[in-house]
Length: 127
Image (cartoon, helix red, strand yellow):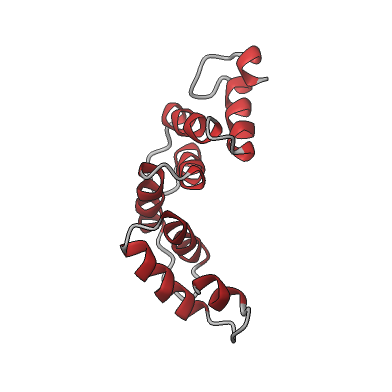
């Protein structure tokens, strides 16, 4: 329902209502809702932009095994967004998402291995 409100599918587009619905579902531990709420935080879409809050929700989703949450949390560590920049932690988290066959995480992991960021430079592992 939150997605419908956010995108205006079958109803009038209302990002504030979408954020409310995402927040409600996220509080019940639903990882996809946590990711959607984080995207509202990042865009500042009718909610106050909150990078630290976004990291907390990404971490919750990642802890539940959500590959998109893991990938997003890895990006936070890679870029120092809401956390101290840490290439090793980013690589560890990207690897978890990559192991779940998330192609964007596999690409990020490959780039880090190729450049030797957070891990030893390893062209074979990058492939």
